[in-house]
Length: 369
Image (cartoon, rainbow, N blue to C red; front, side, top):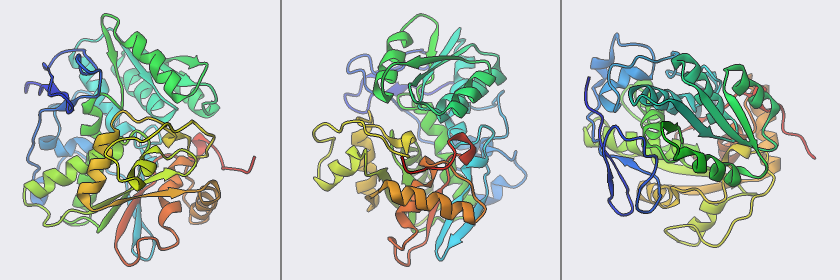
């Protein structure tokens, strides 16, 4: 079996050897990156391969997988004019988080973890729970109070233990991290663990393949902790370095106006978060993250791509959800944020793809309070 790559801290360079259960930089306690620079296969080489995200094996840090639910290869459908949608809510657990969850569960198996622990506002938790069930790994998911009952039901149905934390998303993460340092525990953090990003980058590899070896002018991505955007940036860099695309698409990051710390930093021209963004109610609960740990990386990725940040109001989210439903696509309220941002022509004539990240049955319709 191919050796695992080492991890390193993007802030201070501290290295964490492959095979460690360490979930963060031992020096600064920040997120880790992978020391991994793959070369993707050309289009013709993909013919006849397995119809899941594992078809992009050259770009994944885990070779010869033992675990899969057929995740990936979601459809691309036109919405309006130059904008198409990738239907990632058609994943096995009904959200894009399966892309990263399968990587974390596979890694936990290889590291011989006795217990898997995760924290989530819902979708990541359901994905981790499902893949741990498939791998026969004990799993505990910490969630904040107010998490959608349907998501809690889904987590429990997969056999995971649910721990409801009395507090917001950040209090939930803090509680999980306190337990994550116990011996034999694998912290399946979709924020701190770089293997999750290695899974989310397949979103762009699929787009590139389905568009015949090209990418749209703009990739529009919802951003809370930034795992899909950072994965997209990794894939774009891989394809460009390999000479498989001749230009890089702009990354447009979307936040709810109610909780938009990254958009505020962007408007201030800052390299990191500015001030303190309080938690606030929003229909886009999945991206309502006041202090994302990878903020510097997210801001840099958007800036380097020539992209920008967009924010959407609660009314825009509601209208976008009903608009998509009228087109036959029932998407959860967080998952419609990108369509809310661009449906009225914000990108002009440029071609773009928006991800529809979660199914509407997870949260129901967004309604006025």
